[in-house]
Image 1 (cartoon, rainbow over the protein chains, first blue to last red):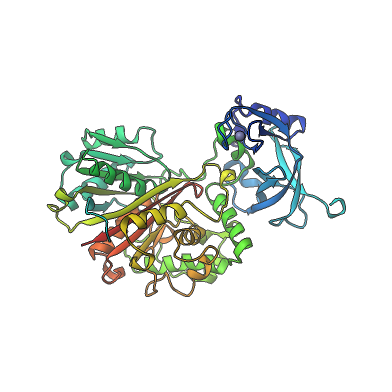
Image 2 (image 1 turned 60 degrees about the vertical axis):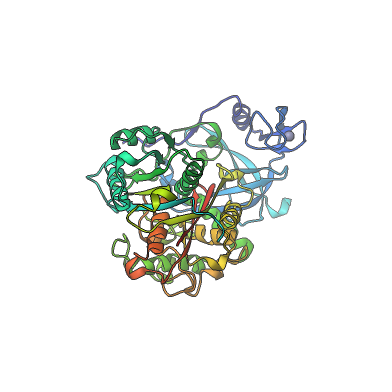
Length: 138
Length: 381
Ligand SMILES: [Zn+2]
């Protein structure tokens, strides 16, 4: 019996720089050159001011957990990975991402500081996960 | 109430619900449509406008209209998730008000349980879905779990309070012979049930069933000639705020904060005019955030509001009187069943679970990942 494949992103001209950045260990978000707001996910117009002048910039990769859930019943190809933690993380630049929280030995909480860690999924896709920033380095 | 009598619900019906392995999704919808038209005293040949939403094909209205033998002069396949049918009501009223048609049929059906359609994960994800799906969040439950987690963090909401929503729904279902889940359920039972996505347990989640429903909406002129007393659409409003969860500014506050006041203002009613509420309950947290956003309690106080039996049979805020998506049935997009139950209550035909002398009902649908909201206010003469 073949294991069902996990969802793979279909790269397009909005998303390609983001996913190629992940492979290179760089977290890319956009910044609008007209209104200076940061934008995520990547797109061709600024949702704040309608400008089409957006540039990819490197995010610092630091953020704060906005909310999370520990998944105990995964669907399809994720069912054997439970429990795992999915979170919404607010980057310091002010945009929000969905991610997985890893290396959180003592668990995670809302408001915890986290940093990006690029992780290769078992099928080779590199995803931007986040892990708690150790107290010693805070 | 200041709203003019423009349009009314004159026919309501459900198909077979629960587990219907021998029925196709078209058969369920045809069954519901014929029953609703018969309920109204109308015929498929009277239908001028068709409203349908479903996940069973891209071409819902084309396929369904042809199957029913209808060639509508107005068609609307607005699909914003479970709240689609509350939006359809508003669109039907607007079309009637504009003089475009007088008889509208709203239809839904799903065989998701028998076809095991839930919990599927796509192999490829494009466009804006590619920034969420690869991480493995089970949707929609995981999204609602993250809303619940944040609600607990900000407002101190407790799992026991979430459980109160499920327990009240079950108590209503126990008064409804058609309800899918009718065994007694306690707060302790909910908390002891299997964890799905923290903090949501199994019994914080809606049922997965088959089923369909249909509603006939007509102009005042036609409504006066129908078999039942008209259930007037007094107010309606809709919005959607996001698609990806990462784009929802505050996961504890939904578009109901926009649609509730708009629909109630159109109807000219206040909160304490509402005799019965039918509130989308895909998950227990859905009810809590919706009641807050609609203004039945303050933001953050939804957990306390639903506690102490207030929303259960005999409580001061009769809600989800058929047992809701948590205990009655939930064939994927539940919104049409909210409207059917509200109309049944206003007709006075709800049997054991009838709310005495119900005159005003507020119906609120919520779709996808707390993404879409639509409110309808109904009333009788
Ligand atoms: Zn801009």
